[in-house]
Image 1: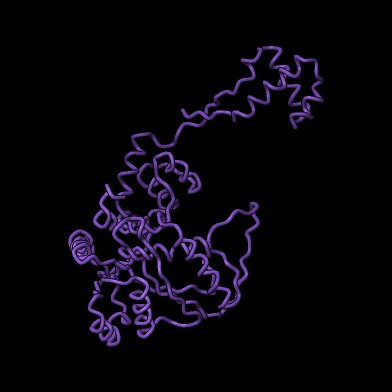
Image 2 (image 1 turned 135 degrees about the vertical axis):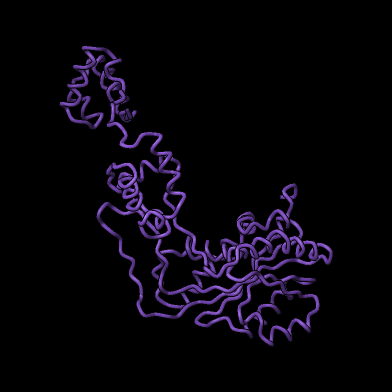
Length: 348
């Protein structure tokens, strides 16, 4: 049988009322001081006179018996290792409603979906937002790149004393990304924004990894109201080599603008620059993706900006804030699973 304890603060209030009463203070005055009902204080004092302080202590109250036994709960955990579609429930991921239906089918026990959350929390499950993964991803090739090709890139960088730059493009939209906020129950807050507004602020950036974990830097180039095309990619590479002189290995995806003739011509003119392509559909391998995520989804969520220039300034401030925190930039590399080869644990 489950038990649920009274809040500890109630015990403290009752004991405080008893001690004040021992000092000869009237119940009505005690009630006003403790900000509780006068009749409640009088009831507490009756308990105190009948059983002393022991009668005022917090007690455990028996709750209803759990509707699933511990053995059945463990069976449930085994069942949900398979997707709901295997039980005829549709979908690939488990929701409270699908779990409630599975429990009804397998154990002939009815649960309201609203009660499923507490039970799953007790079983060390949490409610999480799924990560989207492209069907075209080749997990084997991605893992091979991370475990075999990436260490070779790092070795080449060390031998040639080159920095490694993770390069990527992103866009900050006028239409804000929504994020949960606190509000009074039943009063959903409003986020007013301009509709049918397709302007954006484009940015191309490089997360540059030097020889040590504290030599990680972020370099960006902004294009308000424009897209990043092949010529702007070349401009950024020129800026990158100017601000980070010496040998450079650029790691990026296979975007068409990265494979154009202008980029190839630039590469021939700058032999100190080498390009390395990431596997297809693997943005999680590029650490700078996390920089965009921290800027857009955390610092600029729920914005109410109404013009492109203001959005440009806000986006740049948000990104600069991330750039100033070396440990945060290093955590982006760790999140991609690339830190141990680049900076062995003893160096971090």
